Length: 328
Image 1 (tube, rainbow, N blue to C red):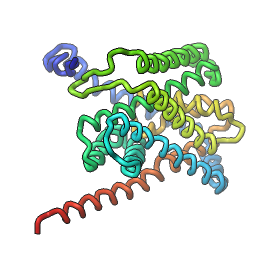
Image 2 (cartoon, rainbow, N blue to C red):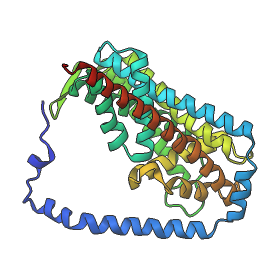
Image 3 (tube, rainbow, N blue to C red):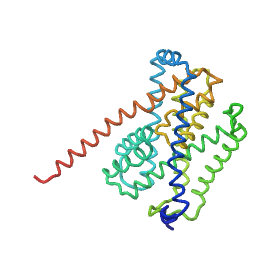
Image 4 (cartoon, rainbow, N blue to C red):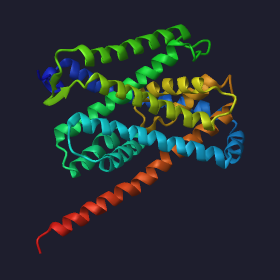
């Protein structure tokens, strides 16, 4: 059953629509101004000499380990699309799939989901002969894999009280545990639906959605959780050694939600603000910021530069093929 789109549900002249259109822009501006003030106050409280000294003291071995963990994370994320290949039942090789997943992930992290997750996948998969409907299915499955994996790992970490919220925060540690239990229940509900639901197909805005098998769903949750765990492992490698891995993982999971809410590409500034706020009683602000700057360089910027070259090579190869096919 098709779901009406937003325009049919709320016409352009609808009072609620026009009222929201009037307030949306000023509220967005105020929100970003508040973020600028927050980040400015944070920057003024950082001992930048300590940040630079910490960055200069990083050992090559530490940077190599962080880079290998980053590579592992990107390959795991690219495997989301391998699940998608099975899901749409299209004859594509892993050598065709993995580059698409890696390139899309790097652009997604740095330039937003619209550029990397959606536009880049559509362009690259279209070159492989995948229909728009099947590309949409791969996108949906990848999104589900990422966030159901998040729910599993976040539910386990939050419900087990591995992260303690600082005094005075609106969200208490007990509330965070309750959130964790809720996330685990949602994940279990997804698995139950994949196993027991009699209805397996839906049509949403013209795109057919099929529930995967329970085995595929379990693989989704496992790969999604593994990717979040590897991201945390990269940060853990670069932060002060006295911090425990479960704590770093929990703070990363909290910062991810803050990044989604703000819609800032790469969560720029949000990640740092959350880590400093939650861990400043465990380590100095300077050492935390230094580790996070190194994390951004290794997990965000370096992969973007590498995948940009990969993408240009793909485009050059496609252009050469078009020239060869032109009639003489």
